[in-house]
Image (cartoon, rainbow, N blue to C red):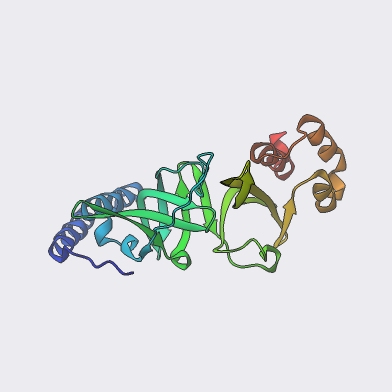
Length: 243
């Protein structure tokens, strides 16, 4: 579904003021230009931006344990997005189950949830978490979907990504139907233009055979792989001065 712009005069007026102010200040610094973009977005509103290109999102699921298909919370999260080569600040929901990014569109006091076009998304943030739409790679076959991965670490030799997946389970317990979403995080290390899934100690040893001593020490301290523990491990081996 395509939602039309409705305030053309408003767009032209502010755009002219925007350009005039920018020229008068002679683009003194990049921060000033970023502030202009932010002011422009706030003035125009989502109904007049690229973010109104999408389809209505009306997916609903019933669960017994308050689980949901979204990243961390059912609520909208403050964030940013580079969408169709334009930068925006807004509130978003990331539907992990369907690998879709959702934004709220409000017009005439009527709210709709819009599913953004995945191919137009370069990257986005949810709070402090950064997500990238990676180029398709054969190593990501089976988990790529729409290509959204959290970018946890980007260093000199290694990049650390997480693919979030939610599994919708249907169970019968005491003759009652029980539906729930179960989280599944897939940790990926990119090295020499290849992606390697890391789920256990053996995976790290296969990837980094010359780091056996450090890997052994790592698993003595941390029995389970977590986002935080793997981040600190990669930071340590990628930047020796951080030891």
